[in-house]
Length: 466
Image (cartoon, rainbow, N blue to C red):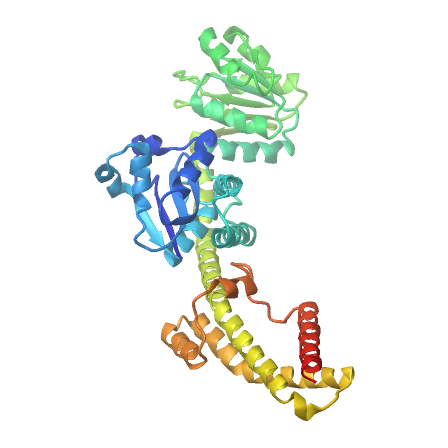
C-alpha cells in the first residue's frame, strides 16, 4: 500500500483556481465517497479550506491516477490544473501532512485553525467509511505531532495579524474584555475585523458611527447576530465616545478627529477609567498627543504592524524548533511503521516454531509415559521456553532490519527462516492492529490462555493414542 497526497494550496495556485475546486462542508462527505470509489484507492480523506484542497489517500500502487480525480470531478482541464498540483508519496506525504497539521505550511505560520480543519476532514471521512487502519494511524500520529509542536514550542504563542494584535493589547490594558464597550468610528473592513475579534473575546456592546448614516447601519447589521449594536449619529461622536472602553477609528478624515482636549474630557466623564484607541486610519484619526494622557492608550497602524512584525519574527524563530520536532516525529512514525510491517513475518515464524514444538511433543509421547498434569505443565514450560530463546535472535534481527530499512537483509532473513515479509490475511489477523507499535512485553493473560489451550490439546492427543 502506498500513501499519496495530492493537492493545491495558496503557494501553488491562485484563488481563481482554488475556488473552482473548493469543497463546501455540506458536500465534503459526498466528494470523499466519490474519491474512495476511484479504482485503486483503498482509503481517503479530503482537506478543503480557503487556502488548500488536498487528497490524502492510501492507494494500491504509485501508478493509481489520483491526481486525475480533481480535474474529472470538477470538470477542469487537466493541463490547466497540472502546473498547480503537488504530489507526495509515502515518507514525503507523511512529512507534508504532519507539517500541515502543525501549521508550518500555512499562510500564517502557527495559526490554530488548520489543525481543527484537518480533524474535521478526518471526522467526515470516518463517518463516510473511507478511512481505516492505515490512515487512522497516520492522522492520529499527525494530530499528536501537531499538539507537541504547539505545546513544546512558541509557534502559536503570539498574534501576527493587525486585528489579533489589537485584541491582545486591549486584553493587556483591561485584563478582561468581558462586558467592554467597543466604538467603531468609520466603516473600514479592518475595523470590522478587529471589532469581531473583540466581541469573540467577550466585548459586550458595539457602537457604530459614520459620516454616512446608511454605511453605519450596514456595519451595525454585521454584528446583529452576535450583540445588539447601536448606531450613533456622527454629530454625537464626542458625547458617545466617553461611553466606550475601546475606540476603533478609521474615517479617512484629512486631520485627527480625536485630539488631546477630547481625551481630557473623556477621562473626566469616565472618572479616569482607561480608554484604548486603535487608530487604523491613514492619515491618523487620533492625535499622538493623546498618548501623553494618563489612562489613554493609543496605537496607530504603524504601532500595530510593528508589534505584529516582532511577533512574526519570534514565530519564525520558534518555527525552526517546530520543524525539527516535526521531522523527528515523522522519523518516529516511519520507524514504527517499518516494525509493524514485519509483524506478519514474526507471527509466521512464531507459528512455524510452535507447530514444530507440538509435533515433537507428539512424536516422543510414548517415551514420556504417563504424566501427571503438573509434569505435563513442566514439559510444556520447558519446551516453550527453549523455543522462545531460539526465536529471540532471528526475531530481533528481523525487527532491526526493518528499523534500518534494509530490504535486502530483511529478505535474506525471511528466506533463511522460510517466512514471508508480506502480510498474508491470516498473519494480519494474528498481528497487531495497523498503526500500533509492537509491544515490548507480551500480554501475559493471552499467553497463559494459549499455554492452557496447547496443554489441553496435547493431553487430548496423548489420551487418544494410549
